[in-house]
Image 1: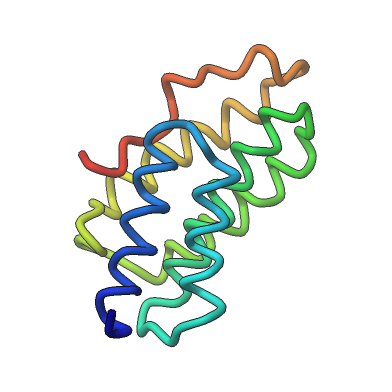
Image 2: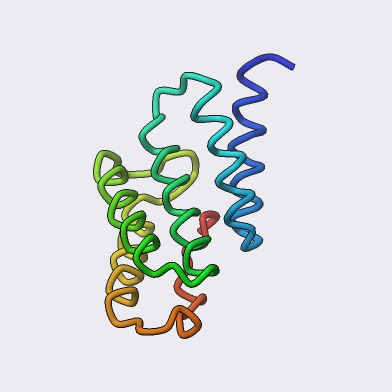
Length: 122
């Protein structure tokens, strides 16, 4: 398989895992893409990695880690607009700002509203 196909397969695999709530596995696929291949939007891929790890931290009761990675991924996504790899950036950032606010209100990670997680296919 040529690099272009591998790059696309890794991206789509990460997206599918993210959509299924498998945030650690999504991070792994995107990490392989980010570290093993040069892609022009490597900052976007890095943002997706940080986003998925933020949710992984929530699953593991690490609110401090979740907050830190949410902030970092939002900084990466600020560099992009329009649509990136089929993802509406404005919609994504809007949802992530809501989640960032939710994180600030949380006392217990068990109370996180998982319905806020963005749909990367929307």
